[in-house]
Image (tube, rainbow, N blue to C red; front, top):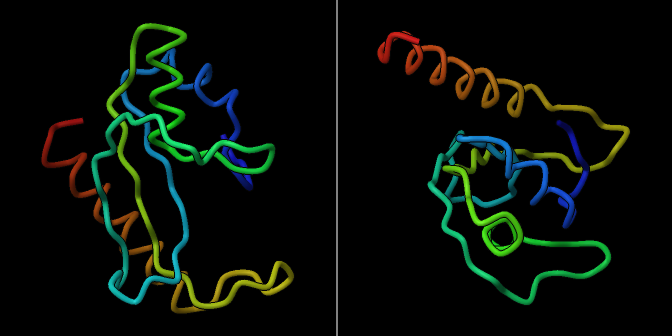
Length: 111
């Protein structure tokens, strides 16, 4: 699925899965290329009509469906944010580096 932003309904969407990978771009200078982190369920006050956090989606999934999949967040470093811009060459390299990481992980685990 592709979304510009997360929605409360995503709790239903992930409730049917055993593993979920959220992918997001970041401006954070401490992310050189990409970062993968395991997410934990946590109800917070991020929910509004325009925003909800991944932990809050997970907590909603637990509350409504009595289960939560294993969730990771893949954060990829981006450099330009205008919608008509597209991906910069540096961001494209970061995406390719992350993609190659997952290909190597799949091969190593025998998937």
